[in-house]
Image 1 (cartoon, rainbow, N blue to C red):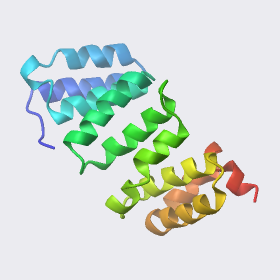
Image 2: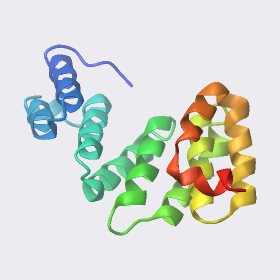
Image 3: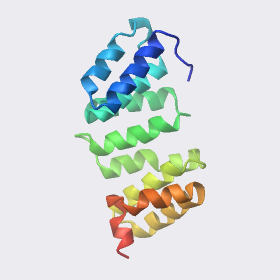
Length: 162
């Protein structure tokens, strides 16, 4: 994605700051200060998606995330956000999130977080053998990061109980 120029970049940075402070309405208001002709830029849209997810506006987030995946299929983060939001939106769920992210394991073989999340979805779908195999793939790529994350992940409780 192309970097934004000031002052738009300042508004995006301010929005991120507001998200970190837990104030999503201010973050969204900050993004609204960006001129209209720049609103469709990927960096602005990605920040808006972060705001929607932070604000747990799942139905809006899933629509924006899908649009960003369609426009920028090479951006791993958009796929992760799409699955994450889809898992939580009204019309979505674990199965839908899995269906979005499972093909990405092959598309992004060096991204451990994709394999990790697919393992979580498989676990929730009670496909424990497949979940264990996918978690093994995630560990091979991500190493200790995966073990740290998996240690307390509620989605993976069924694997820990085996």
